[in-house]
Length: 411
Ligand SMILES: *Cc1c(COP(=O)(O)O)cnc(C)c1O
Image (cartoon, rainbow, N blue to C red; front, top):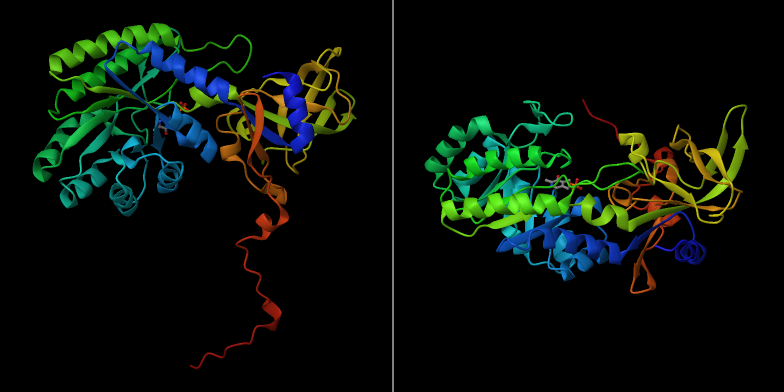
């Protein structure tokens, strides 16, 4: 997005603020689907947790995507955005049977990732078809080797437990309509991902009534110069070939499903913050912004690196800055990074701020969560208002402890 557009948005709507570019979301979606255009039925289910604004969900719906959800609240957000329940898959981890039953009543596709719930759900609702989440125990390890993922991962049902799954299916008479994996590791080494896919295909052969195979996500986007990006085109070509061969053997054209979050929205997002103070210490120049990890926690939580540009002075001489926040705790966004000369009042733009940024924001230090703006067809639309002081007090119960009547307890 043009720096001028971003600067105007910061001026018009204030800072800190999240800005999303609809064009980037659309082009990423098209890139992914065209890489798989030789598969008869492809379904992209957007992972809501990455960025869950209802307007973003509506944009994603208009592209023909479905949703991948991890809580009943996300399912309800999807319904509020106009999705049909059948377009939503529920892939939770460790939630209660009651929550899963409630989502099933709403009509979304259930995906179960442990034997205990599988057995309980199958016994009570043998007529509701479910998908099962498999843990293939495959992770990328180094450049070329394939290593076994840690066996104690909390996600999915181990492939070593297939016999248990089959026994539960037989005893309950339940129907398995999908097989799923989401290893969480990045698809950098396509061969590693294909290796995991083979395990999924082997597993799938055990189930005769499948409608889809869901390969989860793991699509990587570059965060900084030199980062490797998933080669979607090559990946699409290779997986398509194997998937079509599998469908031929299986005897039906199954749906190939994915559930990308980051791939669709990360690069579409910018986080804008204003510099409050430039502070020189003996060895470091700090640029302190009007934000902190309450608004963007990824650098502190995962050590993620977001590129930072000074959009108020893009042509300025580059100097070294440590960009930090105003939170009363260490909140370092960048350590001695080269950025165009910063003056107090300048607006900094953080890139790759579409995924897991606003959705992880909090009110720590009693600060308001930022506003969100969507730029679509050249127009900036406010899609979430900045919070106000009422939001901070909302739900707090203000009891006057010192005027409460003492109740005497009779013994
Ligand atoms: C978070 C999540 C995703 C999305 O992962 P990205 O890395 O954002 O693409 C997909 N599937 C499941 C089950 C998830 O929990």
